[in-house]
Amino acid sequence: MYIAMNRFRVNEGHEADFERQWRERDSHLDSVPGFREFHLLRGATDEGVTLFASHSVWDDEDAFVAWTRSEAFRAAHANARSPKGTLAGPPHFEGFEVVL
Image 1 (cartoon, rainbow, N blue to C red):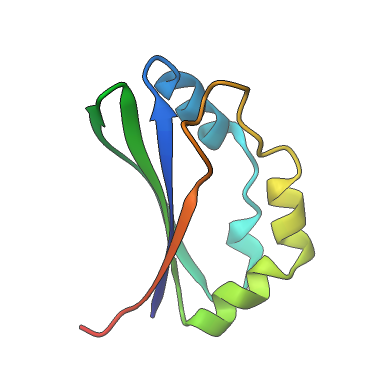
Image 2: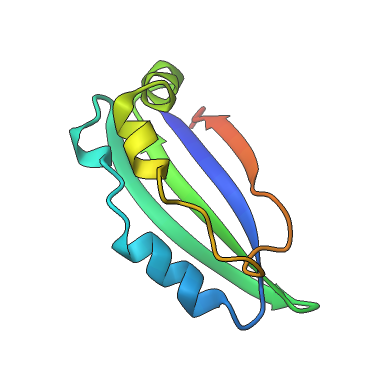
């Protein structure tokens, strides 16, 4: 199993818009081979920034990589830009192989 996460630092006051953007987008994930589940996680707010993480679970890293190269990925990310001022920097990707 493989877990792919992107960490986002959202400027305080923009959290609801950020969550709505994720809630309303068509991720196309349900039709992707190897996809298991997705969660958007909200963390603490510190110094004017709220931490969020997109968390997707895959059968293996190969399934995730195949998705990043697919038409479904391009369609899911076609309108994925957050409005100006929402993010306090670019997202940070982290990938994990599940060992236990």
